[in-house]
Image (cartoon, rainbow, N blue to C red; front, side):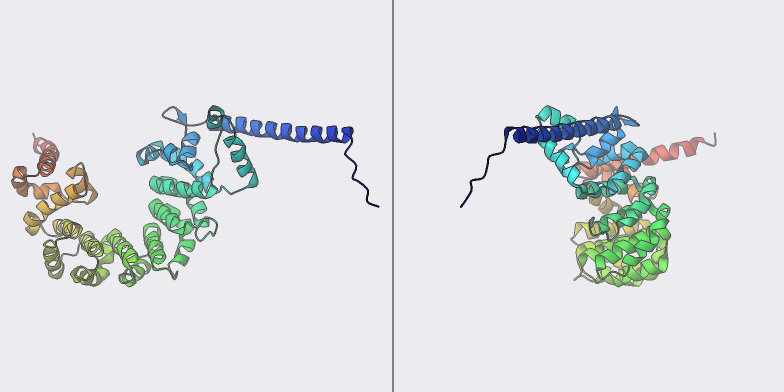
Amino acid sequence: MILDSQPPSKSRLAAEVKRKWLVWTCSLFIFAGTAILFIRSSTSGTLYQGKPVRYCVDRLCDDDLKKHLSVGEVKGIGSAAVPYLKAKLRVKDSQWRRQWDGFRDRLPPKLRNALPHFGSPEMARFYAIQHLEHHGPAAKAAAPDLAGLINDQLTNQTFSVLQALSAIGPDAKAALPSVRQECFSKDALLRVKAAKAVWMIGRETNLALMIFTHSLSSGKSAEVDSTHGLSLMGPAAVPAVPQLLSVLRDTNRDAVVRGNSAFALGQIGFAGPEVVSALLLAVKEHDPGLRGNSAIALWRLDDKYLQISVPIAFEFARDLAWDSFVKFAKANQLDLRRAAPFLQDLRQSEIPDIRRFTEEALRSIQDRTEPESTSGL
């Protein structure tokens, strides 16, 4: 005999409804209390342009790119942002975060926008690492946390972490053991990124030179970064001059890699006849980047060729859309005063930007020399 199931009693239904109501009410109070605490903490502390720094950092690391601040604003906040960015590195995914965002998304727009949005923890860490790199040495307090993210499977941001540690420099020495391990990775580009960090943090010349020179034939990405790494080393990279010359002379190599090699030779400062001869040939090439970087190197190495290198450097700054040649010269460590005798002809250039650059450079030279000429009176 089959018995029909009995319907639940009214008292049981009432108890179930009451239980669900209590659960939802408690959850709502918890969410509301958390939101209030979060908002209060977000509206206290150091301010930037009238807004709490924590609020600004939350915008920096939000999934929504429309909320992001510009790089200039990031730098404007300064070191006050570092503790909050450091906290973002520790963010982990959780069911509670997902539930909160789901609850928030169902609210009316005005209320939703007033409440915090947690978003993806992976993206929060990604943006935090990028912004710590922008802060450079001021982000030294975050170095141990960044070191802990090297080869972290959840983060998967080793390249970005190494760049951030490189930007921090010597104050990130605590991270060196982890960074050195990456110098022996099977990935050529990862080895080069790690070598850059080793150099920028610990000035470990031999290890950096070995990796950079061995990576000059490991594919374009590794080659571009290797030549850039050698330029960062400056005079310490003199042993790499033969390899850089070989790359510069090889017309079958990528023009970007050859241009970087030319720039590195200028940064190293070795003005041997073979170097100068190779650069003089390179400034006749068609590729603007190769010509421009070779001209910068010639300008730095030998005054005898300023008549050749100065006009090409001005054209290169224009090609790169610089708004100021004085800034371009400063970024590339070019002495404008040495170029003064060769600027008069550029005042007659048919290109308006070149004429503007020239007038600006001449004013800058005059501003620097006037105090010197009156100091003896």
